[in-house]
Length: 147
Image 1: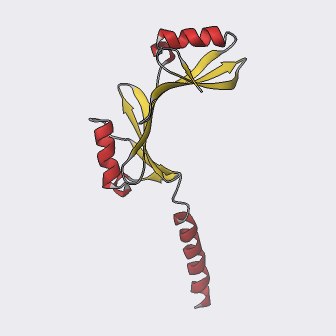
Image 2: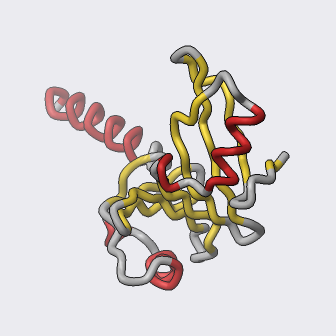
Image 3: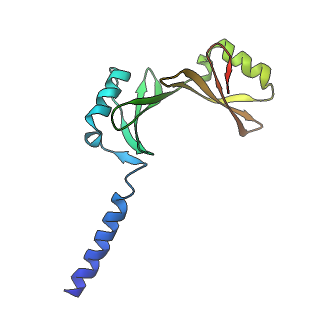
């Protein structure tokens, strides 16, 4: 009996520790609340998420749309929080690239995302200088920076 009890205890402790770390992990689509799935369908119609995760209490759907990778974030009740979509640097508005060239002449844009929130939408840019990522800026499509 003692030989059985020890492995059973280890298995139970392991299972408990894994389930207690449920946050910040991939989750199967059938475990995503219906309200969240419905909100995703309304926010991004005709797109199917390829992955769901739960991070910091929010549900994150990862998807592809029009050749771009994106992430949409939702509260457990289905309230949309934000959407981040990768953008090719060549697709940035001229006003955005002009702002970077003028205000950060020694940097180049390494990464760009289009961020949409209920309050506003903007580009989130990661600037690099000499191979080191050292600036993150948020900028409106018309070239106006956000603080």
